Length: 281
Image (tube, rainbow, N blue to C red):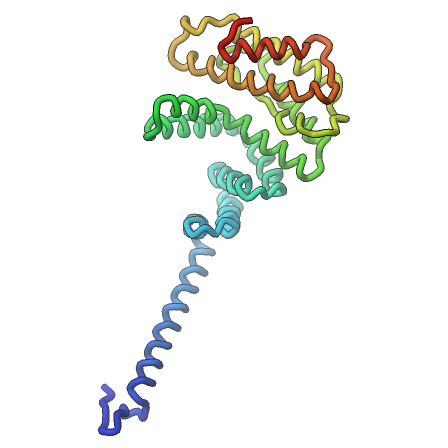
């Protein structure tokens, strides 16, 4: 152990103040080395932990980077879903397009979506919101498929792939059950597209497809007696009405753009919305 001499210096010739500074500097250097080593190790061997850590610090871009590393490593659908949601939050349209395609192509996509919706709804039910807020939240979280696909279409628009966006919306709507039931998964990906000024890719086939969708969905809603339903069907009925109302309000935006449907007038659409809002025909 170094001792102090009569001149206030240690046996190594340093003053006490200088020795303290040396010890402090070495301590800081060791701490920094350990921190960098920890970050380096976690980045290589545990990117998921780094994603959570950087996310908790508000470093969203870094969190997205590590989440992407994690997905590229495990190719897990949960990791892919995390990358997409973080890309949506940061409006990384190239990422949204790229990784949504990968998600939609997964064989277990719809099973995964059903799992996500169930988890979201259960989280709402077990939350502290009022009953009215819970119902509204449950309805808004009940169609994760439509949410993701609209984000994908929005990304295509922002990347100037408008024709591809219209084709995707048409093909997705075309994949609906011919005979709709309360259990049918409803798709509607035109919300962002109908905000565009240029509708050159909105062709006659899409108009006919939308007419049929609206009439079938509204007929199912209007011919179903809510009082005869129970359990999941009651909830599906409300979701059907909510999705249809959203679709009809989107279609109304086309009126000012001189779009005409052969078998669906804008007065009919307004009447349908009135019924969906609880009014009479």
